[in-house]
Image 1: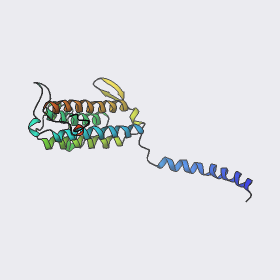
Image 2 (image 1 turned 30 degrees about the vertical axis):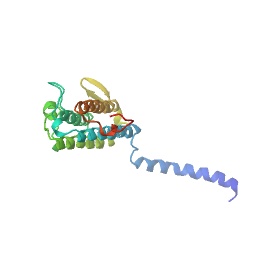
Image 3 (image 1 turned 135 degrees about the vertical axis):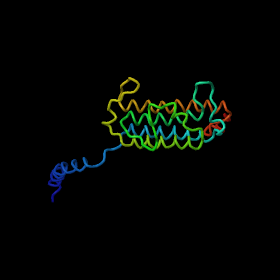
Length: 194
């Protein structure tokens, strides 16, 4: 086939195949939105830090609190788990029944156990369930409206608030640990700082 005929034939072949290519592309699973990838990265980071700190704090310090009416060390970790489940629930997801999550029972949830190992397991499970929930979100579902404490926002913005919630309590946990003489494991030996 002469070169000039090939130049005409090739574009015609591509145009003929385009409808078939586009219809098969529609059957492929949608790509995970970039926001979800970033959200999962933030959750992995904050979970790692919270877990390292929770493991470093001695169990006898889990009941320590800076004052009356303020969450104890252990209650902060349980509260993080509560928040993770609340984000799933209010975002239209399902929390596994065996978790026993009831949004109306915040105080009971935060004080359900003082056992260090149980608290760490409860917190880790909440991150696992939250991340699985997030993986199922699409670009379209991130635009869904969510109501939280009388305020309305997109699910995307609501999940950003969830990141903030976890980081807020990571900061609180760092302060609690340092007051009790525990240096966060990731900062030991950094430039001579403790």
